Image 1 (cartoon, rainbow over the protein chains, first blue to last red):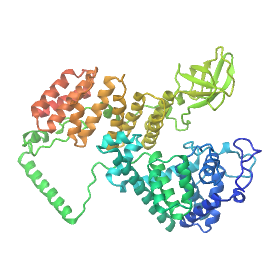
Image 2: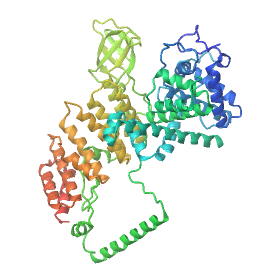
Image 3: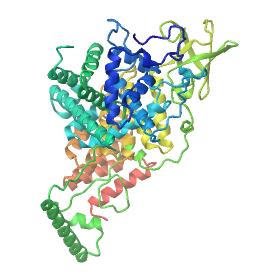
Image 4: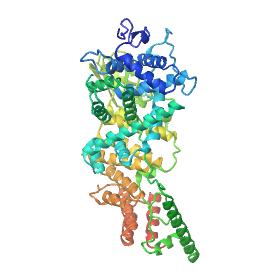
Length: 214
Length: 405
């Protein structure tokens, strides 16, 4: 059975059924992948942590839409594109999972002030601001802090040309503009950008392994 | 999915890293990544890297970061430092009566290496640059900015009509959202923004609300109102400026970087984009991130250069600031190109004078004191009397090259 939309609920209202009972196909594979990550983060019950992370993501309209689009097996051929990109969804899943694991480990490494009381009648989606609204959501703030921390640790380790291309790209420049600025060909810029992200991702993976060992 | 191989995944992941995959390909990649925990890990790390780069201001690399790669290099450097100390001590003993500027002027060109600075001190031994934008960044700001209220909300581009009464509509957008008296806001029947219902002209303005005459239009409560992209960008810029005024430079830089990112996909003029880039450059400079400042001034210059109706004064100011930054890090060739290569002709005399002064600094760094003297003299001749600080800088530069200190 696929996760169902809350057909009787109005916009922004809480999904009534727990996601645990609605998982199949791609979600089960996703749960396995998340459980593997949870294990690496030091979770004692990785499956439960993965379930909880997915449940919390399911409760947010944007992450839910993105989950359905990117990870559901039988998505309609012309399904409406989600508001979130795959990058955003995976970054979100990462931070939610980390939060859930840290919660499970009894550490108050993160604080989430918003109520996640899913059984309260007063709870509705409007009381939990969308994560895309900067500064309004604590999980989003956690994500922002995580990203800042990643950049401050990993960016200085990149080669100088990779740093330069990321800086210029970050300033909103296109490949041809960066190529002119750096005196390189556009293909070189594309290669450097790809390698820069690859090296940054490598640093992030090492960082995650370190976190899991703590 | 049965045909998925490591090379297929690697190729897709590389394209994903460069932002070249469409929605369907991204979906294909996401599902493929579930075939292997290592692939899912690679994809998540790549997504985090991309998100970090696109949503957090990229840190600037240190301008000059010395790395001691071997004990030999370290020992050599130590020997050089000691040598310099000994020579310096000997010179001090032999010329106690002379001040540092005089010493500099008497040394052979190979030993006297002027190092341009923005910090003016009477009798300075170093050539002092004039840069309009960079001068603004150095003094601590004491003025209180009303928009600096930390508890205020972030600017919004869309809001709603919350009251229609006596021929006036009240909307829940205000000055914090970039509106000014006379601003236009588009009105739509719903939040799809596909059914326009007219335009409102702001008559009365508050911080988070505004009022406008409805006129003959049939406008109702809950109709959606939208601020123009230009006004919204202005609000984002003001948000960054307010953070700066509160002394929160990190937040100010983040807000300015977000404003630039938003502006890149918005319908705003290149001059408005330039304003955002210039603000970030100034904030970078205040944060002592000269590389970041230079990069963003260059972006501002690119935007301004693309604007057919650009003010020559704006263009000249950014170009001069950029040249000053280049000289501060010792890149005199770039500064030369900026100051000499087809420069705009500003109408403001202070901007012309700043350029001449900085051409003098450039000449001085290259050992051409005659030319430097000529430039400083010209700068002084056109600097208005009501700019005493700038005049003092040009006078000090002129006195130094003449050896009058």
